[in-house]
Length: 77
Image (tube, rainbow, N blue to C red; front, side, top):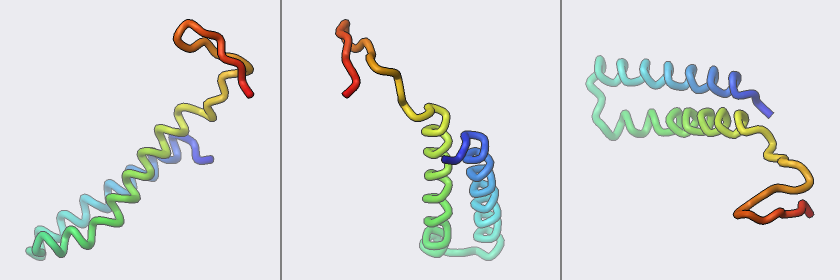
């Protein structure tokens, strides 16, 4: 599993690519649909990297053999 830091670094790279794409689209006077088509995959990759960072920061979710929830002790199966 990727660490939070690795995922955030990857997200920064994707964001940098998006900024370059925006600058290119402005300079070359792309239509909106051209920019949308070109940026969609990069936006998905950015979102995935950010989600990966959040999940990595939360760990594997193991809270032990039992947890307290709504004033009840729940046993792990």
